[in-house]
Image (cartoon, rainbow, N blue to C red; front, side, top):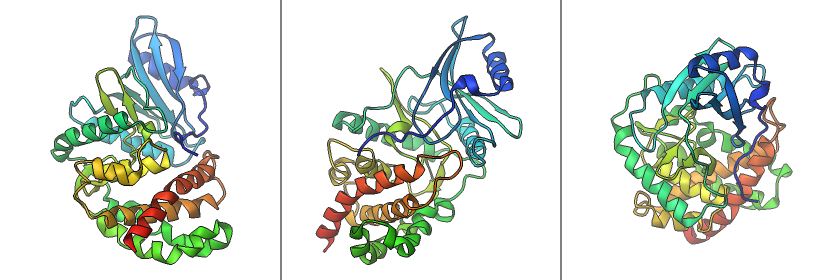
Length: 314
């Protein structure tokens, strides 16, 4: 059940010719080596490229024809990346192409890979520490127009409510526990309120481990929220991606989470899981064919934690 999120990306070779020309103009030579990357849900290409002279970069992009919303997410990511300060755990944007259809980001090449799934305890500790060390840099950051999570995160605000009308389509466990889960999920909107800059898309496939860096990548979902939320989302990803230790154990070990009321994490998990279960019953949107199955897997991964947390909560 566990594993990284994997959509269906087109290879870099299938990107439009004008995208290839732009990449080569920015790198100063013909691209001679391409390593297509998997992971994430975007249908656009993502690749490590290298020119004959040795210039290298990570390229990712998407056009409206592949998916109507992804170019806007890439524009958002470019704006955030351009504002990020120098920090070992933050990636560096080299350039951005935007022709109104295709948006393409050129990002520093990072010689690493996401941590294996399921999460290993050592990798979790390493990433949680990186989140903590990057916090002061993000606290000093201002990104113009960055949306507030409290106003723009339907998973925590409204989407979990849709499950009530779809209970006949899902496992009976969700019907039996719907009302109590909804009672906890009601608190989620207030818990995510805040003005700290947060990544907001914490998953194992959105971090790169290099020999000497732990780098948080894929900033297209960045929000203003409570500063502890990235740590909470990491704990939830222990259930969604899978882990050697449980969500509850990660929360107890994380120095940002260990003193919080466990009911806070239960509220967030309830909203997230209910939203995913509801989404899993809906047709795939164009360009994202794996989304319903991925949401079903994430919800199933969260269910053991929810069952245990509900039992503890009484």
